[in-house]
Amino acid sequence: MPQTDSNPPKHDPFAAIRDPNYRFFAFSFVASSMGLQMLSTAIGWEIWERTGDAFMLGLAGLARALPVIALTLPAGTVVDRSDRKRVLSITQFLFGMVALGLAFASSTHAPIWLLFGLLVVSGCVRSFNAPSRGALLPSLLPPERFENAIAWQSGFFQFAAVAGPLLAGTMIAMSGGAWTVYATTAVLCSAAATAALFLNPRPVVRSGAPPRFRDMLAGARHIWNEKTILGALTLDLLAVLFGGATALLPVYADMLGAGPIGLGALRAAPFVGAFGMAIWLAARPNFRHAGAALLWSVAGFGVCMIVFGLSPWLWLSIVALAVSGALDNISVVIRHTLVQMRTPDEMRGRTTAVNTVFIESSNEIGAFESGLVAKWFGPVFSVVSGGVGTLLVVAFVAAAFPALRSMRRLTETKEDVREAEYAEEEHRRLGPEG
Image (cartoon, rainbow, N blue to C red; front, side):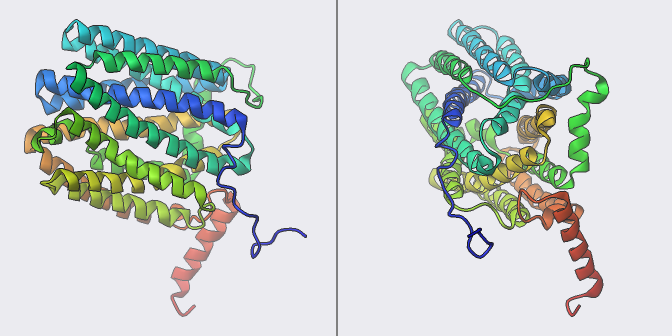
């Protein structure tokens, strides 16, 4: 007897994990994510230790973001016209080389400009790595397992992001320097590069014609035309641009008397919350009111930033960051699933590249903005005003993108979206009694 809506098929929480192809992907992803989280923790600690300037922490974020913004269009085109798993493996290897360079610069107390130069190189590598990984995943397993795979991928990232900062903080405290963290990152990224070579994705039909500038813009045009994607990316860009506090965690660790291990705990806290949320999302059925869940989760994130900014106690700061991570992970799963499921396979590299610009702009330029405001007005004002800004952003996006606000299933078609928009317009026209 066929399944009906009243008798849906039983949800399998481990659907993606049962696929050996996805397990190779997950191992590579965890190794890389853990290493890069360790590197981010160490570079923040070292720059703050050597300069004591919050603006320099923001500048480090800018050094990683600008190359991504500059290279996103050619990077997406390269990914769509190349062997994606090979691009992924090469970028992981290059991350390892950057980490070795940082280990050398740190151990020899090289000038601070060398650290920033290596961060620029890492930003160049990141511009190719994120599109290759994002475009590769949908071709590794059946479409019906994709949302489950994204939930698990988010959980794996959160695990790595919890373990990475804690391990980095412990290593810095024990060795008195950051070079051991960078060296460990090099090993982990090399393991990720090796695991990527064992992936077996479905073949992708590629154009044999030489790339044109118009082709490079295809991903941006697709996002512009898909208003649910555009709304979700706009929400993430503006909310994290104003609401992120990651760059100021070394400053808050100092204010709270937490030390390097406390800094590791503060950096790990959002990912602890996000990991718990990822496990819950993997165990539950797919979203039925995804648009509302996305908007409310980002609003909750803004409230958590306000609490963190005003907190005088380490334990409350950790709790606020943990809850913010749990709420942010709802946004991550919805946004990533939405981008990949509503993009044709041959365009996923270019679309993911544009998505990467949104992510990097919000995270890294947001770090620059936080550092700049903290330098002028102090860290508390920077974080609290950012949380208030996030709430205003949610209100703006909810009003400006009705298709996103009314979105139910992440796999719904354009026709479904148009019907929902028409129903909402009719409801407004006729009023409650209609």
